[in-house]
Length: 214
Image 1 (cartoon, one colour):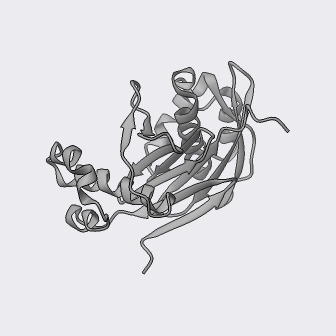
Image 2 (cartoon, rainbow, N blue to C red; image 1 turned 180 degrees about the horizontal axis):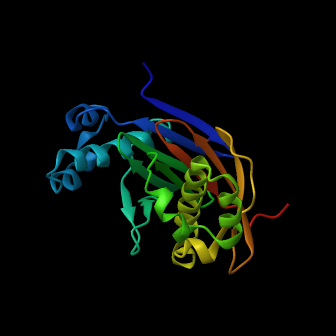
């Protein structure tokens, strides 16, 4: 049985990994298991170790078998220590997701379906999105918008921290897989966001092409 899925999209590589292994099993998936030994020694809980190693297993798949050190910016954004690719991480119960791109900033989000969205939607929907949602109150609509905005936030950062005021997803048809357009309202920049929807998770990723010339 395949435990992970790797797809390519516009020069990016995306890996979704079902994290159902123990930390020892995950550690055995590395040729150089010592590369993460110091950071791993600081983690005590098994679930934290699994999350830590699962993300790095997914990263290894994206990097075609290369095992690389990961650093973090002052704001906690993951980066490759050698700056050879742009990366973004996400995880939820039972799953991890990683995206890499050679030169462009990327953002990814994976979420388990959560009924909390039914009570929190006014906090992350802008007025236009709220009007669309209230037409039929489609739960999948909320799932897609939440993950799309999370993926955007990982690219834009603090200038997109207010999902309702600073980010807008243009009207779209809910499908199990598709693309939506996101707008960063303060700058007017538009982003294409791809999503996958199933019973286990919602996945959304974005590649920042806003500064690319035709």
